[in-house]
Image (cartoon, rainbow, N blue to C red; front, side, top):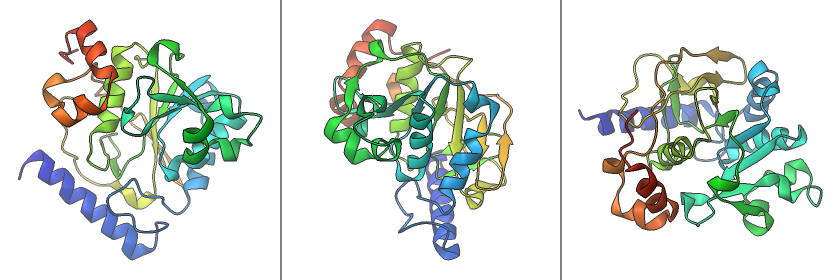
Length: 244
């Protein structure tokens, strides 16, 4: 079984488990699940020292992490969220630009961001103290699997290439307890691990053993290169090796 096939098997196993246990809001398949207790996991993350020490955060746009974005805005942290598929020249929303016209809860929604948020490129962003990434599955070593489209890895590579994610940046994910699996998760050179796994009931601190740097040009598809305008410029500046 290839690494891609093994990852896909884990995804479907976790999606089916969440569905059987009634632990997701709506059909979890094919997406970052909006899991039961997402608000409690967000509050638990917000109680960590890593959260309290963060001035600038980037949070994925999935509904499961809506409350994480709202709490970041409510705490006056610079809060960034990626444009879907990173498809614009300025591929991040600065959600703080929606305040005070919207409440933090309203400003944390994708609809409000797409309609009215300020768009920024990497040159206008602050260095990130905390990154919150969505996951379908994760283990206690911090290895994670997303929904399989590769955009989280590209976004991570772009931000490390731009110097916005460095060794001091904490990477976290919020998931249901059922999404924390025993055993290994297949990993490839571009895959990053998280430092914190936060569930509605626990904070799992993972050993930092994997922190790749940069874009992996050989992993990019023609579709991704066509969709993401910033990739060409970043790879021209770096050589696009992704090594380090």
